[in-house]
Image (tube, rainbow, N blue to C red; front, top):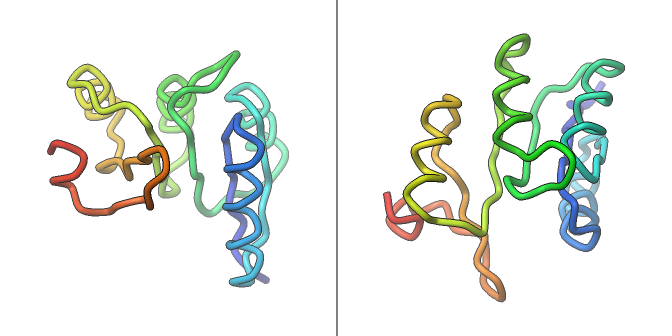
Length: 117
């Protein structure tokens, strides 16, 4: 059985692109357009990894991650177009791993220096 990855992203085109890639690699996916829907998905499914956008309606990615960490220990990848210091501090408080920064019109970068860390 393949791993299940939750994609919590309110931009449909971004969520679809991530889903296409993950499915091509053999992963099962669940999609949620906001944090509240993502939380419902978690209550009804076993998830091995979550990819969470910070800026989502209803429940943002920070609140969702903090709620997840109360009950679950699976890895979380954070997608963020923001790089202000408060986001980094809030992310650290929520015990998130370093963020993958998403730059409009550019690739996702794993290099922490590009995130200002």
